[in-house]
Length: 262
Image 1 (cartoon, rainbow, N blue to C red):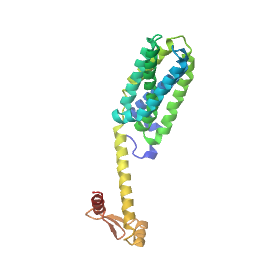
Image 2: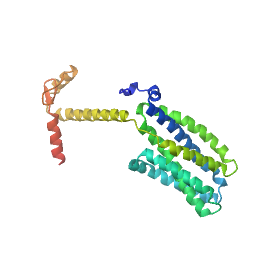
Image 3: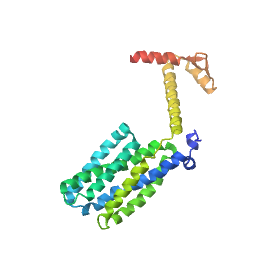
Image 4: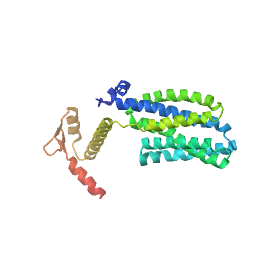
């Protein structure tokens, strides 16, 4: 059972909860795979047939486009589905790149596809971290994932120097493994419900504060302060709020606000 008090939620709770624990393992793999594959393409670029300057431009264009559309895709079909499809696109693009031979046109197209996919995955790691874990532990999750991604990045220039096509085969295998693992990312419904309750509470508090501010001009400020200091908050049978002896008709104010907007 999750703690509903955000300040009481720790990494120990993450490890005890099966959904969060599985998501953490998947995200460690996704971070490591995204970082490794992103940088190995950069290091391996000099060994790919064709003009290295044109290939570099293609990679830069893919990075630019993918960075612009990642957020839109995540909102449209969801972050988890976007990551799965992007890893799959990187897998297919890497596979086709091996068999492109010396055809520069096909190399550019497949390079665009595979780089586009892997950069989306890299960007999505940040989004999913914030979306699939409680905010109070996001920084810790981010740190854990970054440790493993940095280690994998250290290996990328070493792997890139192995005789072709071994680097791309390793690239394809890692992307394929990450495609499958990302299918098991799951949101914790209990945590989502708790966050919804928190948002509702904050929304009500904001509405209450606005109501107080709107009524200060016409109410006895001294009486309000006296009631607030004494903790004299009460509700009548109609649900109207009283601070001391001062009445706040929240429903009437909401109706007036709706009529004003209309």
